[in-house]
Image (cartoon, rainbow, N blue to C red):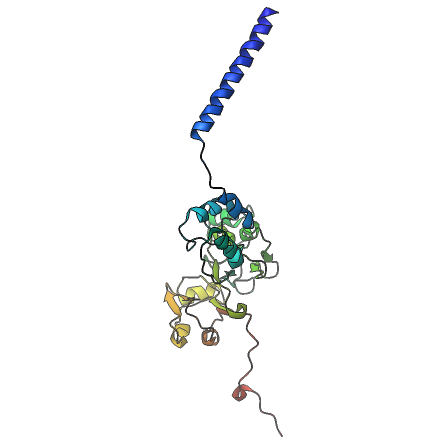
Length: 285
């Protein structure tokens, strides 16, 4: 009986001593945290998506509090309104940023880019890309297994069963960039939403020479430079047989769209073109 009581007493004393040691260690090495971090975190949307470049909203809030200015800090989910609230609370100024949206730079649907083999493995773009270039003749295009869809926390991107390509809902997209990181083929890009949500971009990332690219996909960019020559704003560059439109320079004139022989350049949210009079059929009076 004495042995049991002695054991219990010894363990109790040992527990108390360890608790005291842990308390004093915690007090000695505790880090005082700026209370403003909690307040800034409360302003943020709490998505923890990583679109700001930090591990989560708290890390972003801490960065804002410690920063001399908010020039390098931006929450894509909360956007300009949330950043204005953060700046007001911290007594800083913040410049508005142009809203962005994810765009899919591939138009290689089932009709434009026929399959050359059948993939019979785990349904994942990352897994498929680690084995081989894809199940079509285009090694650059969308693999169609929806890693981008799984990465999106905002239900802003879905796979179109008819085309086999992802489609972005611009009303839900927060430009967090999760889908951009998830795509092993790097066909998704964040671009400025544009005036009235109008955008022009090359919906292709194929860097093969014209003939090879066209054989693999009917609507591939062939690097013909026609779009570049017609652009009056120096917004189009041709690199590695592929055209790219700089959204900061593009004035949305749409001349490149009609000039592209393979229809690789997309115009989004523009009004329907009205045929020119000389193109209209003659009507007998």
